[in-house]
Image (cartoon, rainbow, N blue to C red):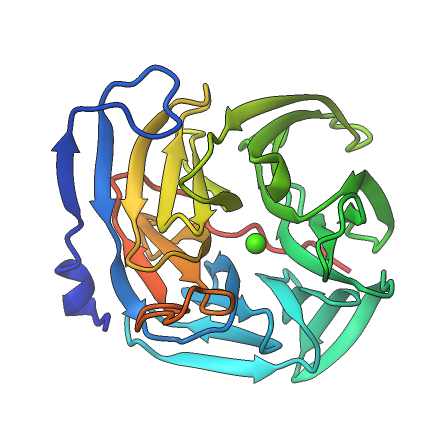
Length: 315
Ligand code: CA
């Protein structure tokens, strides 16, 4: 799974439940979708999915296994490459190869060779989630292995490989997304239990006017990876919550994807039509027993479409 036939049959189950969803500010209809198993990957910490439009494959990583994966949802083929250290995000690169966020910084994976492009290594710290902005700059943030508060940093690497600090003092730098015009940046520092929005200065790329878009109430898990759809709504993976939630650009919960394992880590849109939502999960840290689906890839067609990954413009 899934073949071309089975993806055609991958009808999502939509249950119209008329009741306020968790975190919904105003209540109302919340669409419910059930994700289906796409690949029983058994990842320790599946993460960092991005849809590579050129190859029509899903790039994803197993952070703790130190592996970059490339998954073809049509044939079901999944290939992996060990990079020799923890790797937390993988994006296509315009000039070929992949750009990675690895433990020690930004790295290029090309022709089977890993080259550190920007060494940001610090003792006890590793890179975490990363993604390219609409201008092709690669942003990724860090966290302490022991999750010490405030030890993380969000970095931006320009196409010329100049690295700037976008935010300091973060704890678990996680999901990132941009509005289509690049003027609004959405960000999750997981312990804040919020998705924050910032204005992005188009000339300097500096962030300003931080404000909460979504505040996650108690229970239901912790906000982790995010992606944005063509309507500007955010899809937020809920670690320990077994869900991906859709929030409108106004911060209203209006859809929930149920995932049959609790450690839901990240998601992205992909597929030839951009209408498939791919979801990564983890088994590391799961309550025992982790269950057969922990660490698997999941997929659904939730009724929205989203853009493929923006390739890294350089270096
Ligand atoms: Ca994450």
